[in-house]
Image (cartoon, rainbow, N blue to C red; front, side):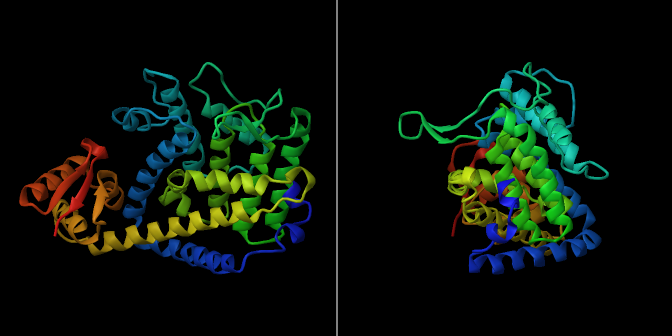
Length: 353
């Protein structure tokens, strides 16, 4: 909300490098239509992989982790009834439902307090706590990194939240309609404000990432459908939190600096477009031959010197795990690769020679 009061002031000191990075994002956005027309089956497969990665990664950022052998069953189908072993599995299933509400909707609903609370209700729909309500007690953002409880940020009170949140969505809507700034800058400001308001008792981080996906798709950045932005945030979790906290300083006085967070988000989107276009290029180069041939050529010619099972799966959507495991076994027998660490689907492999 505070970032949108005076956008000229908020975005006045844009770092020079961000102009180039934003241009890269827009070039990637421009290519998406061509890929959809030429490679619809590939993009469908990439979307399936990204969905699973997003559900797992966004939950894991908050420490909500489930057994690897249970993950694929939990995220297989939206709202599928099943027996849950623990609270974490229930919350992963809830994030699945919320992701599907956004990604599988025939038309994106405008961001509003009722819609966000609907997503929150889905997030906790499999738990006894339930969701769908704004906070009723003051919450704090704290850290125990230095061995003691440290308050990093004090969000607005419940009473303030009731007015701040609808104002935020209205100001964001007006800014987008007026093309007041680059869409990615406005999305970054929106998410920063939402996290500062911290409107619910639990699940603010996950809601913020759902809002990020929603806003990106709504502004035409379809990369959020085909590559997991959340996975890249999880892989850089320390930088993610550092950027948020750096941009929240002095927020209450309207003197905060949006650029640590916005710069981080821009870098994540650039990396997402690089990964998206890289996967498309690899898949195009491997289009001929049997599925086993494609896996073999990817591992020997395209994978990094050290790679994981999930890297192969992500690069070759549509090729099943049994085929990948079969090729890994053959290449290991031939001496082309060796097991680097651990076992099973989390194994790390190293290419020899």
